[in-house]
Image (cartoon, rainbow, N blue to C red; front, side):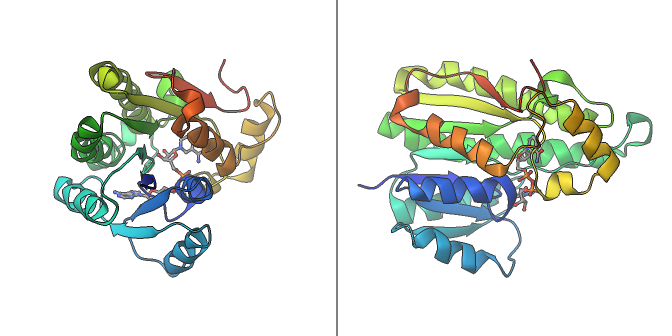
Length: 244
Ligand SMILES: NC(=O)c1ccc[n+]([C@@H]2O[C@H](COP(=O)([O-])OP(=O)(O)OC[C@H]3O[C@@H](n4cnc5c(N)ncnc54)[C@H](O)[C@@H]3O)[C@@H](O)[C@H]2O)c1
């Protein structure tokens, strides 16, 4: 039976690169997206050029019923989920003084509760299979904190606690749970920052370059593979040395 990877928020950015990378490793892809866009069908086609299937699964990760439905759709199509990548995420940056309650809640609901919603629906199949890999996309600011990101940092720190606790719960069933903490990666999420801010950030990265989605996808590939079978409960930074 061929292997399956479910990736949330995978219509663009880091998630899209993870989907493409895992398809090249022979995984069928269940590609979660929230809103249809014109590039989605082209992405499905590109993925299927790697001789795998790509199932597009619509759903908002902050909605538990959506997650229940799209996980069922994935199981109906592929029978199992070998790798889950909780990647969907948003930012709504603002100093706490001016942050609206909704902006705090939205970020927690999508980034942290979304990770729970999808994992909760997937874990039963991994437990039955006595195998699985769960890879949660956190952030270096979940470790270091960052002014203007109390909501986002809290959600990403929460993901780290979630990862370590779940890793302990399911290790005996051969399910490995790890988190990736990217630093500054070139995607739409970081595109909104001014050139000055980006230059300033780049100066503080020891490797002197802004990361690419591929840098994160390569680690997901490793954490999905047999080569990483003795690694669980870890948070691995992909940040050019930004946070040491
Ligand atoms: N870009 C960076 O520098 C950086 C750094 C650290 C962590 N991250 C994390 O990496 C992940 C991917 O971010 P990105 O940089 O590719 O950003 P992005 O904005 O390009 O992509 C985010 C994806 O998540 C999806 N998404 C948002 N809300 C959703 C919801 N409710 N349900 C389903 N999908 C939803 C979006 O549609 C999009 O496809 C996020 O979790 C982000 O926090 C990014």
